Image (cartoon, rainbow, N blue to C red; front, top):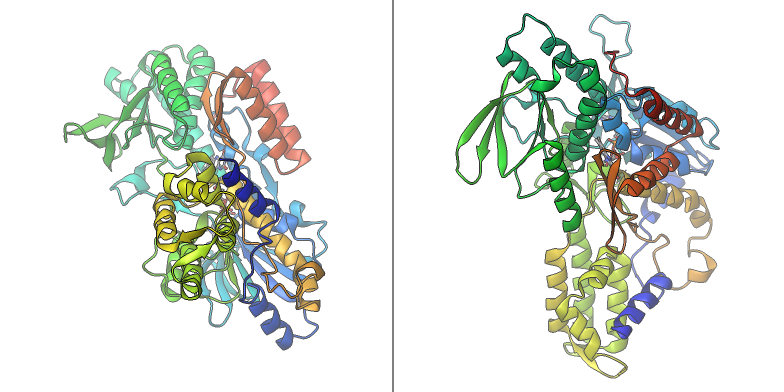
Length: 564
Ligand code: FAD
């Protein structure tokens, strides 16, 4: 409806200019507190993690007013979308990592890096406890503490095993470069063993059964990569082993790639069927032993046990123990994931920010804020809102809750839509607050939190760095930039996620892409789009050149099957 869109456009283009906020800037607390204490001293920002979120923050931080200290068990950044390509030798591990010291070497701020992992966070004394394996002592562990003024948690997440027995001990994961290298070695070991003359037929069958658990984008991409490796390269190199090959993809839900469009799901399922990849849906893994994997079939309730050679576990993520422990200390024990507000500040804790996979924005809090506005309006306008106020509230929602706008555009949510339609062109028209509240709760119940992706993590890192870049200016002009002075607005916009679409590589030089506006593209041409997007997104020219040369090498000579 034209009015509806006009309203949304006004609120978006003006950056929520209609809105006024009476509370203080989210950054004000920490700025004023610390600056009065440490006049003239640079603030110490400690960043935990050098993944997508931490690296994006470090790359975009341009202010020289901080001393930055980075702590991470890896002294490099990994371009995770290409990890599945490392498992089959299409791309070398070294080509997708960039040393963190390279990334920060020309930055205007002073930076120190410690290769260590943080095992405890003490928000009261503003300290993090770390341990490093770089030690000369016998037990091989060096422990130290780091003080901070501002702490940035960008530690990502761990693999979620759902406490399934045997998974930690026997399954492979695909989270880090080391995992990809181990997985690759295990697959080649199976081929080598299945080629030995002394090995029984039954054992060969078992060795050559590769199982992928989890039908999300990573599991699907890995199954497709494995199929390509097996048929394009290994079939020629291991002719006696190829007859025993079987690839199975297990998914507990109704279908694979459930966050994608139906057209992509159908295409992927059909393609896998043609390729001979056995996709089993409604099949939940209940136990993994060293040689068998047991599943519970949803339709029959039966427990089925199948022998396997290699199993990859790719069923989503969970909170790291150090973050869980921190959550218990700050009153977030009941939550599943660490919660932040929309400025990425950890709830219940001063001067700590959390980005990427290790946290989630608490949308419930946003809804509570909006409810408070209604309450205020309720008191002043006898249960109704003037259209002007109504527009303000919609603007407020779209500003603070960007997915609502996307959702409304996409689904034309009926009650919301009717409200806006009825309000058309009549500024005096009054809107019943109760009806609006009902419409809003309809949106709320259908909203999902942001997906744990590199896109979200990188945008959050960039957003926070930009806020930090402007902090000094804000300190000098406490009333805010000239154009916002006296408006009482927040100095910084809340974080707004821009979705650029997502890919699902399906093997055989075919990829599916779901782009904004529900645009779906599948096939060989999309594979070229995938190549160009990922080449452009790589973190440096060095990695870009290496990856492009790996792709060219693969086209000319095939994949490398050596075990190193
Ligand atoms: P990570 O990138 O996981 O970084 C966490 C960092 O914290 C690491 O440097 C780690 O070493 C460090 N760390 C861990 N523990 C500690 C500790 N105790 N103390 C200090 N530091 C610590 N997303 C997409 O958008 N598109 C894709 O195509 C895509 N493909 C993927 C393919 C694979 C195989 C995988 C595994 C993920 C993929 N993702 C993709 C998801 C994406 O990689 C994650 O969402 C993203 O890495 C999250 O970024 P992060 O910075 O929060 O965490």
